[in-house]
Image 1 (cartoon, rainbow, N blue to C red):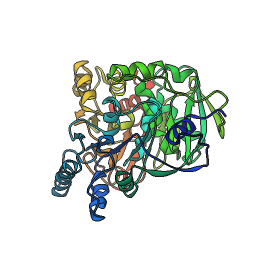
Image 2 (image 1 turned 90 degrees about the vertical axis):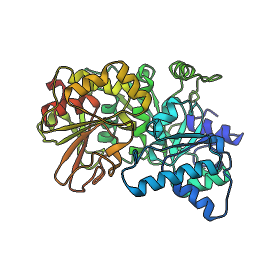
Image 3 (image 1 turned 45 degrees about the horizontal axis):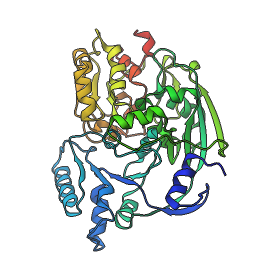
Length: 417
């Protein structure tokens, strides 16, 4: 019978046909840990387990609390480095490469058809390359590190067909917000979102990461794009050999099918405190902000920084706003530097920060005081997500973030250009 991408991935893992709804146990192709490696590895030692099932499949990246700003954080990082050596993990990226998901993708740890588990909910980002990535807790990760297996329910699949042509200053982030505003934050609970349609073939890998990354905001287990020739070209440029296309079978069964024509979209903003609380940017124009945040694993790539630079070129950030720029990785930082993008952002008054998670996680740099508001290109705006529970976070595209930083209030970027 024809299979969805999720069913094909689990069928490959089992060596037999797997169907949605079936409970199975499977071995991941790769696992990723950030600072969550410490509690996961500590659990192994607590139970007398001295070896990891396959150290070469484990990647450890430090990104949430980098650079260490408290004694406790420094000691945690020190302990992680000790445990990495103790368990023989060679794929340790340390604290200089960037945000874990960007590092996993650009360093060639993800390929089409993979099953990847990570100690971060946005592990679904790897669906941009046709992989099934999902986040798990540290207790689950401890089990995986010890045994190399985890149980799953093979998820049913939802197809989201994207068509049309982006209007000026509308981007994939606006597509994410449109989906949240239209369908809510639980329409894909424990489902695999599979993106299709004419537009998907035209999207860059960076743009696909935005949509796969935010699939979890709708409750999805995976957010997968077909791996097409663009995917293959991208991976081959990274030096990956023997990689091919990967997609669902014709006639695969989907629980729901949704269609979105992006030609009708305009810049959107998710208001506090939900990705589903979405309005058109022009409808909330004039809302005061004290901070603008450009970056994160959702929108911190050169494509995103470049979109903001086009808005900021020849303009100045409002004196009432602090614009923080956190590139998604060191490679992104370097490329943006070579292309002059960082120069434009700095000339406009942006504060250039290291390639880490920063204020996206809420308690490490750039946090908000009570009564303050931030417009951000991040993926979550939960209450207290970026500091004080009495602050507010608005989500928007890089272009809308940059334009709002110039105006000193939330605005439609078309008001600036």
